[in-house]
Image (cartoon, rainbow, N blue to C red; front, side, top):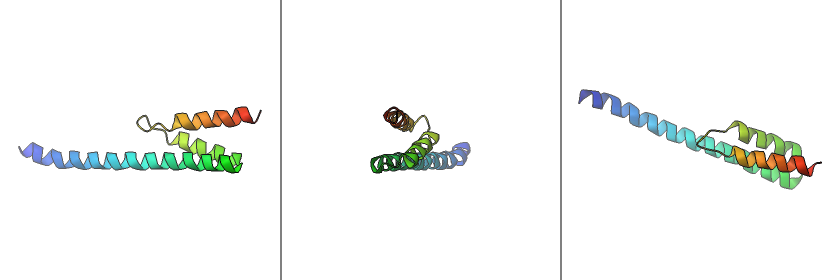
Length: 81
């Protein structure tokens, strides 16, 4: 019983911290992806490419916005040819 009272608060705290970290990573990745799409609409391809690269760098297996960013980078590459 003493073990449970010692471990459970830390386990709950760690779970809450991991949840908030996942939310923050998702928001950052989404923000970079949306910024890239907006820059692409405005015609600023350099800014769009940089934003998509940042979205890819924020990749985590649970929050996969990298695939969408890679697809947009490929679209920019084929359109510029």
